[in-house]
Image (cartoon, rainbow, N blue to C red; front, side):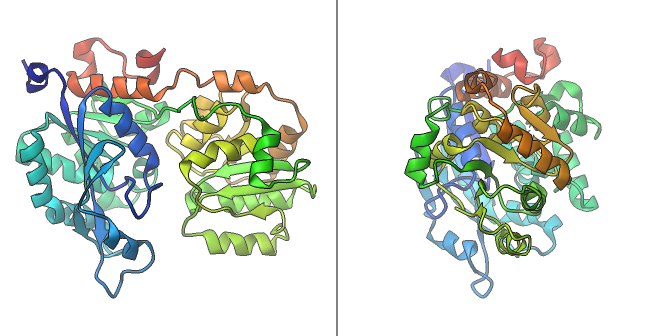
Length: 411
């Protein structure tokens, strides 16, 4: 009988660096939602590291990290925020070692206090890489939850990619966001019985069909505008440059694009909108509180996500749950969500012409918002938390006779 069985609830130590904090309450909001869902089924303690950067290099968000407390309670969850030494954008293949060495004492203290049964790391690198080493130190099983960018992008550099693959091979289980991601990591030689699809959920009590006119009035959007909303990080892999080029091909002054998010390419994208002569129709509300996102989606006629690669995008889940049709690229888990023409349209990534055509068509037709919302109704956060807890506590899937896909645990 395991320690978790004797206590009645297993204890899960979560290790990540993508998690909300007092300086950035929207940072890693979907990791937090996963953890909160898990906390309904297990005892959870979080170690959410923040980078320490030498003072002369600390600018922008790095300076803001100095205001994050070392220990905090975030919506009922005890979180420790140790610092780890980081030189931004330099020798990223060393970040896993820097991360492990910098926080070793803090993690050891939390492990002594909390006495976990398992370590769950969100993102394969550097957090999963370090988690494997902590697992060896404390003789604990390790599970790594891959989120998308760690598999789609961070694994590309040869040395860093090898470190990611070795970490995934060394842990007890690997969670991925979509069947496409599962296929990809299986191609790295992982045991299929140890790789499980555990997608994100959606809170249908908040993300639900709502009155469009009222939402537009609250957001001061013209009632007769044709509104396209994109909730996305403003970075290259999200394809926002392609979306702006597509807007330039839509010759309709009533069409407005609202880009909800921020990122490294904000200035470049604003300049691109100016050069494409669509700056008056492309609006940058920047990052908004997560509680405000349902209102923006309610105001939309169509939601869009033009990514070059994805895991299982929350932007798509939440838009569909709000009854809004999606125009998105046929990548990653998006193809699993927008699986029917009644839910939206998929186009090739990087193709501004196809994106513009799909947006025009989506704005011109009538959609059944209740049917769209129903397509993701079973993807609740409680289902995610329950499935995560069961998989963390169980042996590998073939021993349990359990199929390792999302549908097995929720439908």
